[in-house]
Image 1 (cartoon, rainbow, N blue to C red):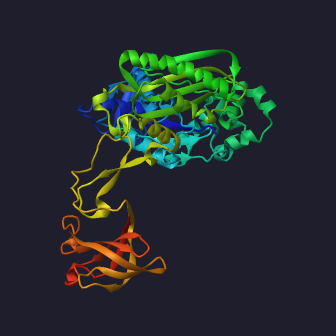
Image 2 (cartoon, helix red, strand yellow):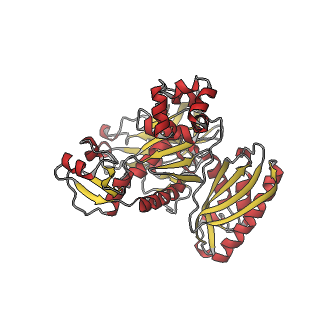
Image 3 (spheres, rainbow, N blue to C red):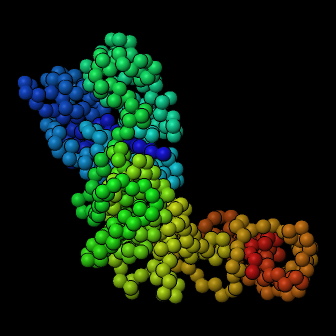
Length: 507
């Protein structure tokens, strides 16, 4: 299912001007103006100016009469259009296909990318956070088609609109006809005839409307509804490494796609090796005969130039490609690359535990299947409390430890229970060691114990742990099982703990 994100920047020109001139003194409202051949007119207005009634194409003299201390500056549409293209290229961190939607929007084909961010809702939140951090006002809409996403971003009710798959028709029906990107005269003619909503057009005979308004009306309606494909032409970063193949005949089988991928990867790998670089992110774009694009994105945990590794990552993603009536062009782009590390600087994940294996390939395959956010490793943390002694870190993180980890003089079980499970101790020795305890519905008789190991509470972590203590025991039962038990408190003073017993680990 194709999913298109439309990013609308309603105050694009003025937000961009403020980013370029952060130290400029501004009055109560900002207006950018241009010359229409007869007089200066408003090109763009910020939120304060719009609230005062200033609109684009208004005479600049009229705008100044509405706000006494209005700040006015000359605008430059060509520079703003170039900046919009750069913003579309910046959005490549989100998905493989991004395109400028002039004059104030960006399209992103996020098909198959939402799981990398924890779902579509989380993905929209990340996009909003990043763009607002840059100083832009943003409205977002995610739908099945570029036309529907464009319309909902500008005419939807909320700041963020998420249309469920195959819900395009219901979402478009209540929107005004102007949401279809029609010429102004076409919209005025439709309104005079009583067609104010897209649903009115959809339920009306097409032939009379086409004769009166031309092909553009039904063309835009079909694009928005997904009846007619609307390709997105992606932006290409200027420093990207690319390889492309054009087919003599359209292809559509997995075997043919595998053959072309192998050729593209060989070209990319050779270029990367010559530059001493490795790929961190690659985008495979397949252009179908109907003009639509099928993007596939893969990433790596470290810079990689080995053709076999890169080829395997892409081949595992062939299943998500929908060739339709055939693919005629395939393009492979390295959208992120870094200098390769020397052998001496490689991490354990890159060279394996024994220096011979290569775990980075496994890490990359897992990240591309389920998303990097779901793949993690355990890193030691400076804490004597067993359940705090490790932390989850992103598998691609370069940090080896959260803090300096303490050296434990005692044996630790391989499997810890989090949280520890309460149990009932039926008998204790004079030393405090458990002799019999009830766990998992049966009584365990202890043959041997080792302990106690006293662990004090961490008062700097919580005030309640100022006097807290735990006594840990390694116990071996008659069945040969070994358990790691602890008592809450020192067994003498009540303020150190209530004396309850817990099972914390299994050997």
